[in-house]
Image 1 (cartoon, rainbow over the protein chains, first blue to last red):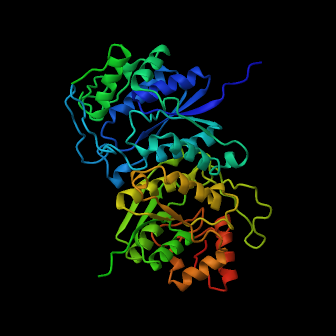
Image 2 (cartoon, rainbow over the protein chains, first blue to last red):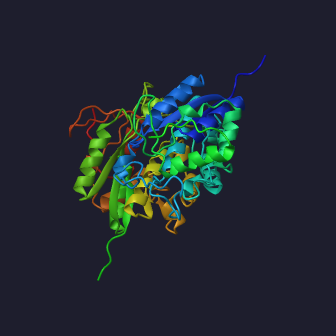
Image 3 (tube, helix red, strand yellow):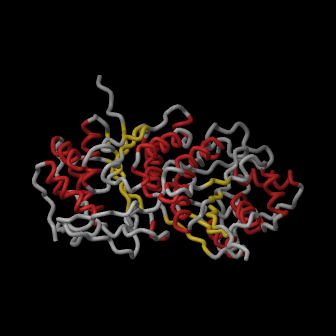
Length: 235
Length: 235
């Protein structure tokens, strides 16, 4: 008798990276419990994409945690700071060390919720789509950070204390955007369903990406470098 | 010219322990930025107490983060599991290793939000009222856990990467409840304003503690052992 698939928690934002991670976790044979956040992000159409992606993948357990990071302000993704725009051809130029789109401690908060969710569903595996290359300016996208989170988590929960610590999987950590897109495409990810733009317009399936924020530029360059058609609808 | 007081984030639940921690942080000279959570707790009168305590202490910055841990279920504090009640004289007897009032990854989630708040207000110090003696059944109340969180936080934020990591202060970590009460009383904490009960009744200043849950029993025993009058109103 074949055993049941092991449960895993997958952080699903609705973007290109996490959609790829969900496909990887499913390919690895995990029973995926997806977790998304409504955190006051200005690009909430991303959440609609997450819900559609989970449904298309046949995920039976997808929860959306309501958390309001706007009470802290401090980021272009949640507050009234303008998302930086660039010429699509020339690109961002000399980007600052840490972008204004950085949300304080966001991945720590997201992983903390994933840790709670993992304990509840009995999962020993958490998948997150962080990437150290394209997001080198975000401190919480580096391997050393993820390792430290895993070490902390090994002491944090009832499950860990009882001998079932969690592993943090970041399968995209050292991939280029082009490599991520190639990998996902080979696994059947429909990137037309994903939203990367930090400042999109539209709603309910008619989302248009701005084409000029850092996320749009990275995504467009990724498809170009992968030699694949970019399915993104731009404004 | 005296410098401005250093900012610190204080996690304030409205209970006896965190009220004491706030008094300690203020005595240590910190400019306290308090953080409380509305997390679907069944004993939400605790939050009213937190707001009243911060106001009474003259704290100018108190934020209440809305997070809904009920989507995960799994604890008597947030779900439909009964809070265990005991005979006030005989006490809890042989308590299970980890109580059903354990909320999965709660302190990790709370500290993650504190980390975000600390970065926004420029604080390098976070105070939390965890206690390893009375809550030995909670894995996230142990010194090793707090040390691991601090190590993780040192890699997690823009501030840390730029050379300003946070310290996690847990001044109650190895105190008995009686020692906590003596310490707070010496600092002028008005424990009549605090709510410890896991299952209180009433609202708006007329809170009555059940007197029979673990938290009530610990609190009552603490006042008795400290040789101080218990100001708690019991049902």
